[in-house]
Length: 87
Image (cartoon, rainbow, N blue to C red; front, side, top):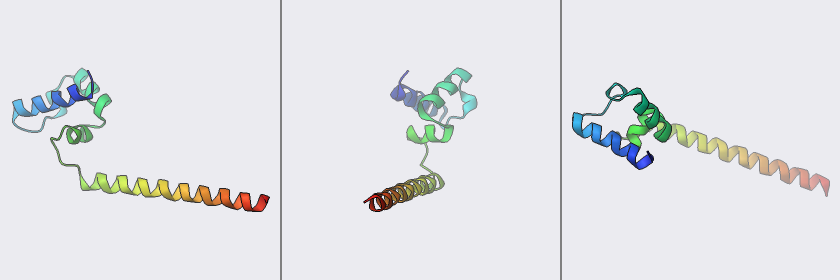
């Protein structure tokens, strides 16, 4: 089963139940498949378009992105310093 089929599994279950599906609505093998293809439960529901992406998650992603950029800048400035010393 691919990612699209997994998303359809979640959407079909939501439509059948008339609410957001819970993990308890699925067999354990289906839960493992959903998590393997789509990530943690809340992220899976978000990817299926069943749940709005949480502000907390978006803030966390932005912080991670900023930290990565800072590390990259620090690394490039260290390399520039090494190059200027060697010359």
